[in-house]
Length: 119
Image (cartoon, rainbow, N blue to C red; front, side, top):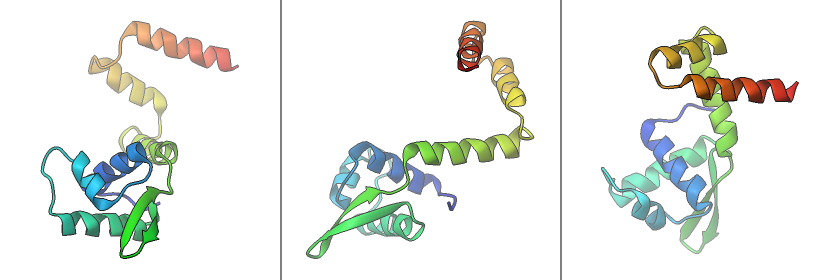
């Protein structure tokens, strides 16, 4: 699975939300820094080349849909981030968020309860 640019990732989130879409429908979902139609079309074709989307042809137009699920992408992204930024340690990752006050003690207890229920 190739790494996506920020714009490609933004477009993938739109396609995951819409499930199937023509370029003009994707364009309608972009609220900030809307690219030109041809630029967006090129980005979507790049996603196709990278193996993230496919399409159904309707004459000269294409309806695109994701072939990589959000869950699969999330797993890949999180594993890479944890490997690269936290020395492959989930403990280091959770500790980072606790120090940054991005997670509360109550949330950590909920996580611990979820872990214990799985065993």
